[in-house]
Image (tube, rainbow, N blue to C red; front, side, top):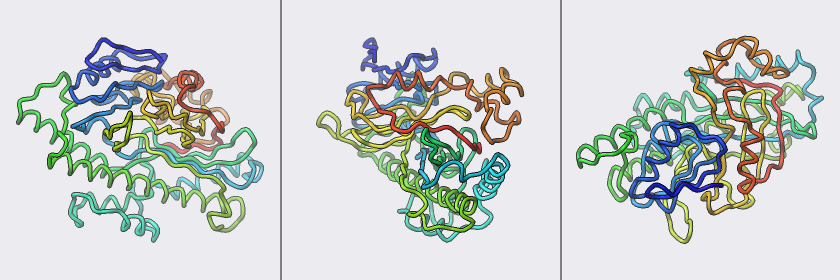
Length: 393
């Protein structure tokens, strides 16, 4: 870890590689008046909207909607099954399982044609958000509960080094998260204009604490984070059902099929106590890594992933990276890579192999081994996973 002390607040950096735009964003954030102690830049840091992805930002007295971003509550869930890899069968059978999962979990902008009873139960259990019950976005949120979304969201079947089978999936708060987040970012910008507050980056517009705007945003933020977890739980039920049919030819009660699970947000905000004070912690592309806490650090498709335990390092506000982090933009990846790169970089993985995944190839991401080496004082790797099947949003 190194420290940049040139700005109003220090920047503590665990990253070996930081692009110029990400450095500029870190400096802008470090000069905001309500930062608490310092800004954290993790090994997967890269440019985002307003603040870098792969950063942890502690604030007192204000919250910035762009910090948590537009996929509020986005995160990853993983489970370990009670059987070994040989029970999944040969490559043909793995491809059959892939197609089964693709039928069960809608991808892209799609929602569910049939809303399951468990999805209805999950949705009903959520506390109310600011939208009216009959708002179209809220109705659509029910239809999308149990769907993946697009871009880097995924569902994977993996193996660990002892040939145990795992399922892992990555998704967030879907369209309703994007809709509400974009609205709050615009609202914060209007508030800055109303009070004639000028910022180095308009995307750093904020809500002062104890204002109506802050309270409404924070309440919706918690709703969206809970919705995102419910979304992952519903998807994982479908994965477990499909895997159960594939291996056993029937449904099994969940507790008899899996023996370990972990679920962690990586785009979210919460009130936490650090250095004896209650502050707002926003993790933008970062996960909580309290001492002994389980977490997930995935690689890109075709690369390995890790299940980790946190070391509780206070200097990172008990956080670690949420993945490898991009080393190039989606546009650059589409320009650089070819069909040959797809074949080479996804060798051994059952997945789609067309140009629609060019921007998600391992070559577009940082080396996960280096990312893990950069944060050796933040987390301990416990399980190493490798994809057998990868379904991209």
